[in-house]
Image (cartoon, rainbow, N blue to C red; front, side):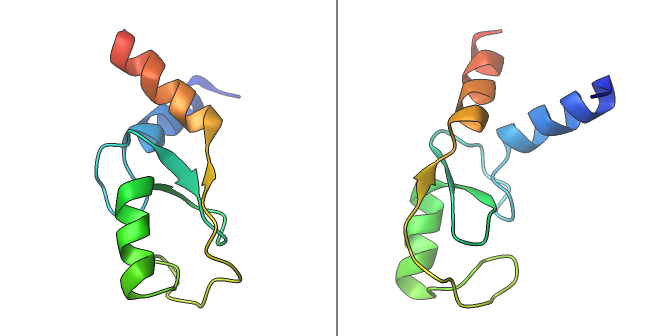
Length: 78
């Protein structure tokens, strides 16, 4: 992995995909994208679709994105 890819991943980890809010509790939705839990829970209550594709999600479970959470915490400490 090139350093530019690492920096891009770090930047992605700091921002909520699609919503551009700082992440504190990143989760993965059924569309495979990472979102901030609170923002995504709010979105799902109103829409039940992917915020990115607007397609119906196969399920509404949100799974913690441990890798992104670790990156965010490392950046906050550093």
